[in-house]
Image 1 (spheres, helix red, strand yellow):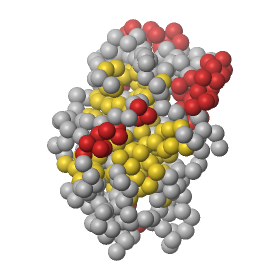
Image 2: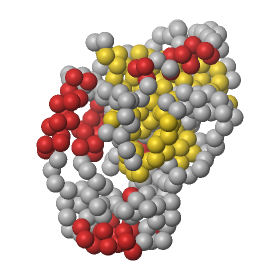
Image 3: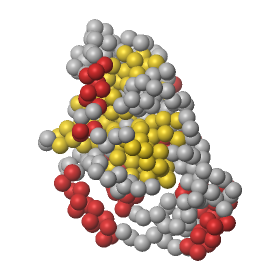
Length: 369
């Protein structure tokens, strides 16, 4: 029996976690060797996916886009104040190297305070302190053909099988698996589908069982490496291949209860992903805009709103740019106030030349509809 929309909306969970320990990511088919999922994650086309950690106990996933920027989920970047603040000791680990993170920036449409994931803005960016030399950035998908495509999900979350669901003591190793995008939000008829009310920015998969008795949508036959995202996979890159090129088309967002009514990434459960293509312009704008000294909220201007952020965090240590630490010494103090005062009223210049160069360098990596 298919559960009703209201039942499913209650049984959703953000794919976050609060502890770190050794092991793997994502739930897999019980009849496929784990080594195959690990080998898929190690392929070069997914080398841009790394592991985000912060506050000495939180872990998520992210995809490197180049120029010191990482794509992840809005709920990962929102911080204690839902706007990127209150995050300390943040870093991005990839290919055996660890890089400090200086800013966590949720999309302006992210509404964590309402707890409503249906709006489709669960996407954000992390700014590192430097570029990562020698690492090929992921290409952003700009098309609209995600429905019915095969999605390769890459992340560092909890692991387990479809029979057991995820295990909370198993986290921290990169793995990848695949699933079919069965549905996209944006249904207009509430009697037709429980996806009514979910944004078209969100796409969904279900975890099909080999015994064909647990499936919500589409074919009941699982892919050869069927996979379900689990906590800790949050923000990880979800890739599709088109025209011989791999693109990051989604950001792992949340789980939804399936056939058994329990949200644990077991057979029959559904996972949701924020589509990247509606946010490409925002991502390009953020990556092309240099930080303006004193601009704590990263809105391109230094105003009284930035002063309020600095005042609220004055004296804070292990601070970030978004806390008001403009000189990068890890502390919000009078030196940062002097920087803000010196730039008060300024507006970031239009990055026309840089944006042109960036688009020229990356045009061959983008799929245009």
